[in-house]
Length: 259
Image 1 (cartoon, one colour):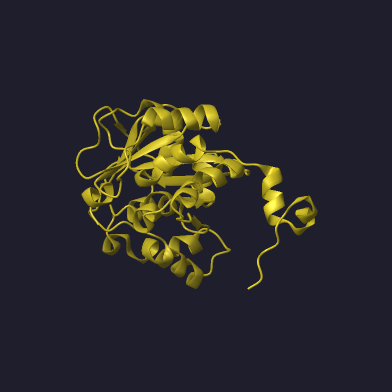
Image 2 (cartoon, helix red, strand yellow; image 1 turned 60 degrees about the vertical axis):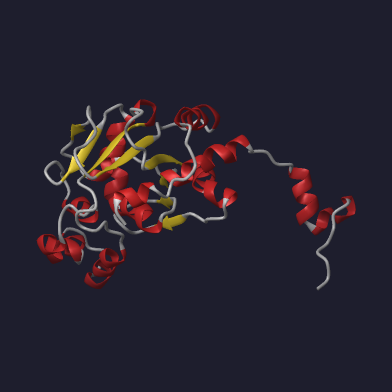
């Protein structure tokens, strides 16, 4: 899949201002939502290169910066590999087989490290030339919104990551174990799905993720569902109990019909 094909997945128009209003004023996110753009040419005008681990572009965007990471501007070989900027023959076994995971920490076994990297998502080499991030509130109108990335508490993550599941029935993809760059930027591409992830130590540390928070990455074609879900967000607790729980049958509930 190339970037044109990825963007063709989005069929519904997106009201960015309405999405931002819902995230900030209705859901009341405590941390700013971040707009991520895949680039197959030059980064968008006005974005600055950042020599940081790619996962931390969320942290910098939350603080109002428009930044990008590419093959020349970065500070993590693992992120370079998972974004397809660093070919496997250059990354070598140190990165591709996860040897780095066993060389500076004691809890990874070599076989587990190798399986971790082999099971992690990685963009094919040359798919993109850079990855850019900006606050959603400051995303220029002419810059594509390919992913929406959030760092939020578990309750809000559950609701937002589940938007597609309640509108079209697509369950979100969850990850625990892979590098944050793989989970946030490569997994949504390959699964064509929303991803919720706990991340790993580095990604959580660089983004100052609290113990009660997690990551959510939504592809552009799922973003209209966030608007739809919260514009139809109502439920009747008593009616749910009546329909579901036998203990409420005396109050007019109906048991399942016999097969």
